Length: 286
Image (cartoon, rainbow, N blue to C red; front, side):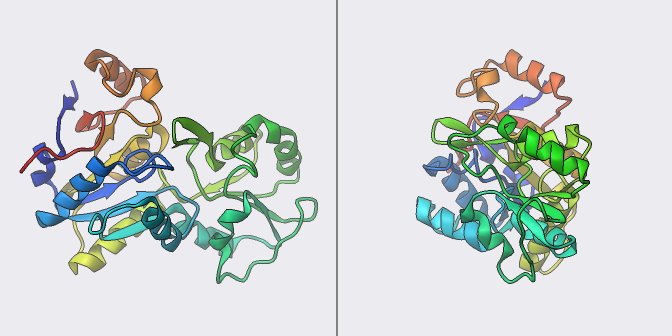
């Protein structure tokens, strides 16, 4: 049975660094989880390093600004690696012109890149950062358009592999939900964020710069709440994982105070084997 812990301090000494998810662990899109912030700061206060690793389609500078605007305290992390960062490489390789499928707020993804844009009817590639209106639209609203694009064999670059994220007390659809439909339709999907290797490679590169040397994967603990992203990514890329139960899957087992039996069944059903789990990220040590 996977160990249930009450504080990150119970296992932190076994690791040199933390790769921590952002959305669902540190904040819910509107509010910072201050206890989680304190836990990560405690890692750093005790000599460890923290790299935030997020499927946000924004480059890391945009996530830094977002965290500041949400009120994240100082001293919580050393570096940030984003899906937006690693997706830029895919965009550079894409055949132009591209069609941007997503809200205008995600346009900084293209800053500094030599990219030409076109309507979907004449585009050669699609770059998806999300739904145009994620407050009101559903992924199925896009099926007909995606079907036509798949017939034209347009590559579909997904800048955010998440299916859903929390926004306050709601779950909001992400670009990964559209990529899933495109894949079902037989289209070519290209992803670099979690659970895929490029974002973990970037996180390790940033950690190596901080430390001045590379660190073995067995000295890094990943923290996250998403089965198809955080859990699958840690497993595929060789990292131990601390699972945060009160995140996006919480409704599947009453996540705020989940029954241990229900959690264990959930892990078995999803072929998951975290080293430990807890409802929320906290630190109980002195």
